Image: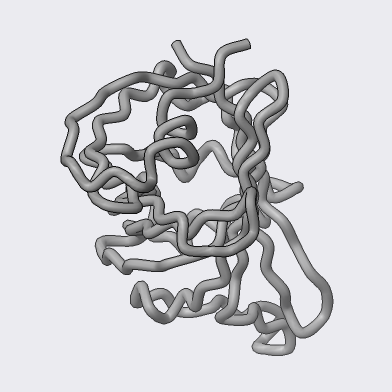
Length: 192
């Protein structure tokens, strides 16, 4: 199967400094996973996102600038209602935390990929995350594998207070959710 064009560009043309405008589109394959993990002072929880709800294909527009790919409008839009935290009560609390009635979506914008790491299959990704009306930028290492399909995986730890969110308390304050959450992704793509 053909490698995705943007990965070929990352690994085979990093030495070029000429700016080129490119576009392609990808689909997220069913074996992909995206979940949010969190903890309380009693136990932990995870909320799996139903990736079948993402509108495929996803268009990608990018430029090659020195040793990085700079993306324009490369985004995933995640409907908050498509997260399953294991029970209706936890789903309700999760959507209340995210202020879903006012902000029904989480948006992830890929800004750039930079091959600065010495590990062969690792790149640095810059992303913007929009949650509950606030946007924050993050830089994180991402591992890439390319066998039958392009696989991209990694994790991002963030603090919900950065987005103006307050961790819920249950049972008269005896159960408290941690402000720290972790977004785990293991995404498989195919070029469309």
